[in-house]
Every structure is written in C-alpha cells, then in structure tokens.
Amino acid sequence: MRHLELERLAALDTDEPTPDELAHLAACAPCRQEREAFARLADLAAGEADRLATRTADVGRPHLTDWGTLSAALRREGLLTRPSGEGEPVSAAPVSIASTAMAPIEITPVDIMSVDITSVDITSVDITSVAGERPAFAASSVRAARAAMPTGAPRPWWTRAAAAAALLLVGAVGGRMSANVAAGSSATTEVAALPASSGGGASGVEEFGSLEEATAVLDRAQRDYERASLWLASHDTTVNAQTVYRARLAALEQMLTASRAGLFEAPQDPVLNQYYLAAYTAREATLRQLGESLPVDRVMESF
Amino acid sequence: MDTDAAIVRRAIDGDERAMRLLWNQHSPHVDAIVSRLAGDPDLAQDLAQEVWIQIFRALPSWRGDSKFSTWLHRVAVNRSLNALRRTRRLAAIEAPIEDHTVTVDHDEGTRTLLAESIEDACRHLPPGARTVFFLHDVEGYTHEEIASELGITAGGSKSQLFKARAKLRRLLAPLLDLTDDTAERSYATP
Image (cartoon, rainbow over all chains, first blue to last red; front, side, top):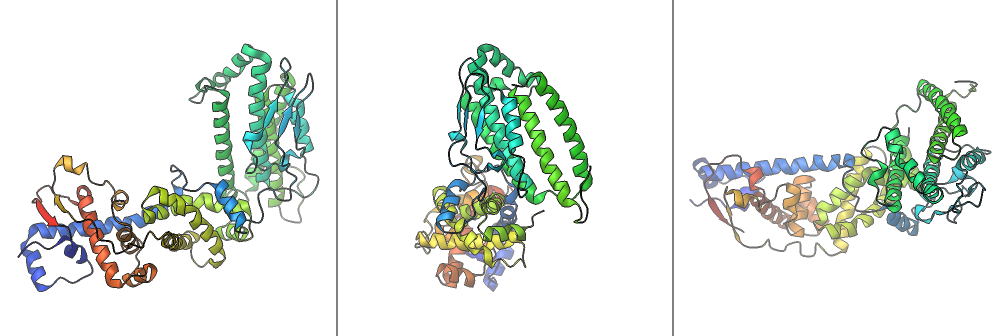
C-alpha cells in the first residue's frame, strides 16, 4: 500500500482510520512518524492559545493601534464622551513659559494641577527666554505649586501625579534651554556634570546629540510615567495600607526639607526644582490617600 | 483599587482614562489575535482600530460572570472575523492551497528556509485556511461553528483545516520531527 496522504494523516486526530489505514500504519514507520508529527502540531497549536492569553504582559511589541487615533475615532462614534481632564480648566492654548529680564517665568494655565498629562501636546510647549537672563525657576515653580493647592473638590491623586510629571517635563526642558542660552558653556558643563553627581549610568547627558533628542527621551519618559501611573492606579494593592502611607509621608517630609534647603542655596536650579515639586506633589497625593483610607468617623490630625 | 468591573463601568460611561487603561492593558492580546487572523501586518493594522471600536461598543455585554480577558478574547476573535469579512478578505475562503510537491528532509540548508514558529508558518497559509486553522486548532471552535462564522460548509471547513495542517507540518518540520532517521519521502500536495 502507498503511504497515506499528508491530508489524510492530518485528519486522523478526529477521523477514525479505516482498517486498511490501520494496517498500513502498523507496518509503516514513516507514516507513524508523520502521524506523531501531526499530534505535535496539535500540541503546538493548543499552546498558541496560552501564548495569546499571556500577550497581555508582553510590552515589548509596539501596539497595532495608537491611542491618539483610536480615541479620536471613539469620540466620533460617541463612545468616548468624557475626555481626560473634562471639567478641569485646562487651557486649549499651548503652555507658554516666557521670561523677561529679571522676571520670573510665568506658567499658564494657572491651575497647573488640572493639566492632564494625556492631553498636553508637549510639542506645543513654547519656551522663550531672554538671553543673558536666567529664569527664576524656584520662585515660579513654588508659586505655581501653591496656586495649584486644591480649593474645591479634591482631585484624584494620580491627576496630581500626572500634573507633576507634566510640570517636571516643562521644567526640565525649560531648564535645559535656559541653561544653554543664559550661561553658555558653563551651563553646559553644569548640566553635563549631572550624571556624575547622580551616580552616572548609561543614560548620561553626554549620550544626547541634540536638544530634540533629549526632549524626545523626556517625552518617552513622560509616557512611561503615565503608563505606570495608570497601571498602579488599578493594581497597587498597597492603596489601603495606612502604614505604607505614613512611612511614605515621613520620607517625603524629609525629601521636602532637604530639597527646600537646596533651593535656598540654588533657587534657580531646575533639577532641584524638579525634586522639590515631585516630593511636594507626592506628599499631597499621599496625604489624600491616607485621608481617604481612614474610617469616615476619623479625621487625620498627624501621621 | 479599581477592579476590571469598575474600569469597564467607567469605560462604558465614556471615561477616556478608563478606556485608555483597558486599551493599554489588553492591546498586546488583541493585537496578537488580529495579527493571527489577518496574516498580513498591514491588514492587521487596518483592522485593529476597528476591532477596538467594536470591543468598546460591546463592553455593556460583559456581565462579569467570566474573566474580562476571556470575554475580551472571544469578542476580539468575533470582531476580527467580522472586520475581515467586511474587507472581503475571506471571499476566497475555499481557495486551493498552492499545488506543489514538497520534500520533507533533514538537510540543514532546507531547514533554514522553513518556518521557525507556528505564528511564522501560519503567515504562509492562504487567508481561509489560516482562519480555519486558527479557529479550530487554536481557538477550539467546532467545524459547525466555523461554518456558521465564515459562511461555508462544515465539510469545507474540514477540508481547509486538513490542508492547512498538511502545509504547516511541512513548514514546521524542524520543530515537529524529533528523530533524524526519518526516511526522506515525498508527498504530493493535495
């Protein structure tokens, strides 16, 4: 008898072999091996289902879709009716940072905490500074942070965290640009020294060939920050652990004190401003989390 | 901590952050399904957005009695098939698999030309055969369900499946052949 056709062998997992086919399989080693190969193919296919299911954790591959395009389509379809930042006074105009001689940088919109990181078009950030003058980042940043103190209904902590990330990004870009414009080579030296003072590492400033390149990295970091924040918002199992909040608050207090002292020494340093604002925002968010985690009949007086 | 149910509820209400969170978490899974069914990367990109819109549209039908990812998987498969049908890519569902004779041997040079994974090998299948194989052997659909989904007969589904398996078996020879003493043999491709 001739060998069984491949298609016939492929069908034998569900179709019963005829007596003739059984007799041939008993006598023909190659056909038996083919049949076993098809069984292994079936196993591989079954494993594909598991692989598909675990793709959720595979973050290495780029998405087939991008959220910008998809969200626009969802709006058109009427499925997305509450865009990020709705109800919060986010200015449609580009964020503008302009400084004049000896004047502090003004940041608009004023309610910086309402800035939604997902809707800020970072490419539209307009940063202008007057040559020869370095902006007073510390004063403006602290003022902006104070202006951002909630006066009405509390906002979710992650909104604050996102706002902080946006502010840090603006501050970093502004600092980079103003340092180059104002201080020339000495400013470049100052910034280039940062990796060394922070332990060096693979992401040193010297790796960047241009402002655009560094900005792109910051932009990517912003997106990563946002993704991590969103993930934590839904997965962080420590959100009800009051002890974690209290320990975090104590540490943040120390960070605030240290960075505040640093700002007195170097009030215009954008990096110190970043640390201060990050600690400030994280402290506010943690305070709110702690407050929300307490029983309704208890008021937080200390931590 | 937001549960899937809470996030889905907010997404149904049109909350962008919740929708984006779902998209971010489940995109790799949905992308993999769309890619498998579409075969062609460009077509997969075209389909993915439509599939996501359909998923968001279908969110209210998730009752919470199964895991969200399980529900999402099934919806993604169904919506991908719908989208493919609309693009008429499945019109040639019964198209014959290219006719040639393949020699299965163990020559190293030949092996390098063969597929290295089932995902890779599936790309070499015609759309109809690939879809039937994916639905039956990967997703566990019955031939009757496939026939209903694709508008073909159960017999047609079987025929496509066996042809697909036969071609995959040849393409995946390095993975499926465990011994080196297999005699070289030729098969006439059906």
